[in-house]
Length: 363
Image (cartoon, rainbow, N blue to C red; front, side, top):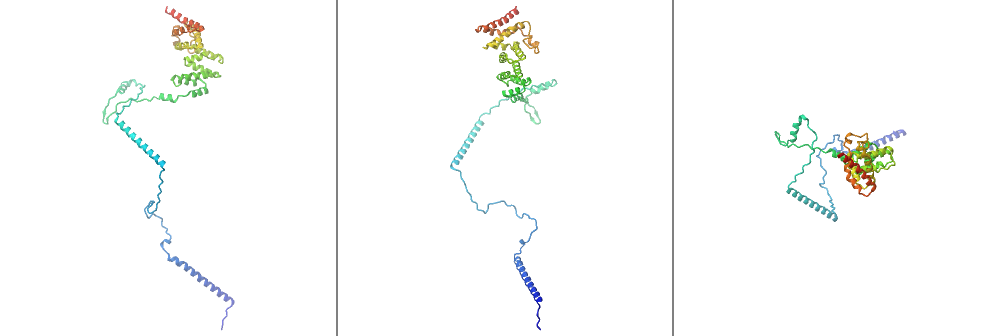
């Protein structure tokens, strides 16, 4: 009896057959992929989880076994010539130095000059005077367990005052800026002291005084007069006498007149003698007028006009007499024959006051 399959059975059989063929194809493909890999199986294809460590000693970079191309670039002819000249010059200098060293070695060594040693100003206490003197004069050597000692040498004192003098020295412009910024006697005093020490010249000093006098402000004019009175000299006397009558207050004019009268003091008579020998008629006339007006007062012991009452001291006026002006007689005699009748008349009067007083004193 012949069996016939239904439609569903045929469909089921077809699906089973298709799945079987598909499974066989996949299995064959997997076999083909695994088989080549198995042929190259080696330890290198596996992952190594060990920590990396150096298995060989360190080897520096080397050119061994490599082809190296060397290229040499030489100097140009001009540069090569210049280099030769430099080398020749160096050789010449070295040769000169060697010759100089030989000459110095052959010549006797010059003894260095001893440096001046400043004197010590400190004085040892009375209880240690003997030991201090002995130690200061000791120049011998003594022998100890450590061998002979060096001879005694006095300590050298560095002249710090000279160094400070150069360090603190100011220019005229710096002094002017300082004084004009703070116009007081306290500011002017260091400038006067610098002149006395020699760090400010006489020309700078007189220029500063005149600059102050030329200012319209009386405060500056007063400082200028103060500078002239603080440093008596022929230049200061000339500036005081040539002050203009206008532009000064009564107080400043009185202060200037007192500055002129201060030259009648004994220590300033030499300045009057210098002034009488100049060719300045205004200066000579003013001095002779002041002498003729005040010599009779001095002869009577009246010094009120010579020194300001606030600055008067017995030591300054006690030794002042008309005889103190005897040194002016030669200059006065020269003025008598100078040819100026006005000046000659004043000089005759002054000379007469001095000489007549000396004659009376001698009798």
